[in-house]
Image (cartoon, rainbow, N blue to C red; front, side):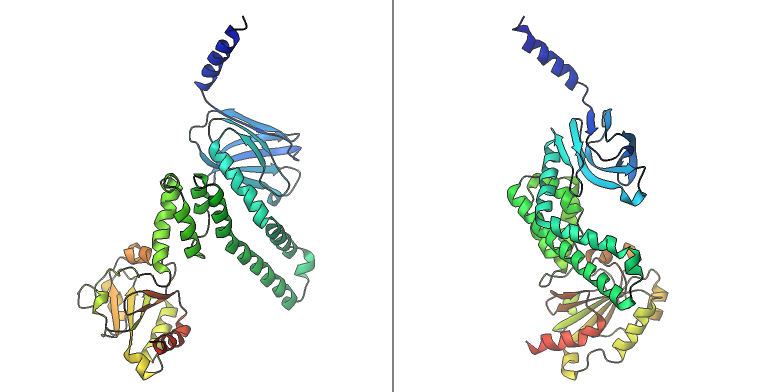
Length: 376
């Protein structure tokens, strides 16, 4: 009989695995009465009651992936809810929430273990800073702060912003250290996709380069790769993207035709009061020094869709101030290739079409041009 038991156990295991399901148990929660919500892409997938700190889900999961678990305590304000991300697939999960950290997760999911390892490292490297930032954010909502003199309150806002900036700056370092320890992590592509890549584009590009080929080929990895490919073109020293479009005489624009050592590229649209004001400044002499003006050119790229409107509002087209549009508006490939989020936006390039400065303020252009040409 003893010899048969292992065989019977194998049959039982095979039978159970033939119908895999998600078995998620919430335990040791401090919620006596509330609910646990399973959400994905901001849509609620499932809601289960939490009673005496416990809740459970027992059902097949049709689509494995990253889900948010939201815990709501019915006895507390809604803004006190807890939220964390899990990678869920049809296997077992035991979740034990922690007070200020990522929950303790026991699971057979390899990807979830990778996610847990990341959050553990994040707590080690940024836990104190996160706690300090959270404390300051809550303090700003207090009656004490609201009753402070404006200057004193403004100083607290500025202090909080600096903490938030410091935290965002730390994230690429956390991910770099994580990938050093977990070079084959698939979860890393999802973590990277959740970051605001634009602010520290070069650092995040370096993080992306560390991803394994498997991670780069996930949906998140492909999304990050496409975005990084655009961002690196906007880093100083990178060759800027081509500009698609025609000049007012219907000739295709070619940046190789520009004879200048430094070039200002402007993106604008008719109807923008700021663009109109800036065009007036540019017409009156944006570049002060005559020698600098001789080596300077401007390319104004319109996001208009109507040719007559564009021609009516565009400054005069000259060899030193070139007007371009493809009349595709926000659907223009120029918008995607240059990551235009608002107009007017300005870029400073050298004569070889390499980026010197992205998103430069128009008021800073004369000084930047003068300093650059003085170094030549």
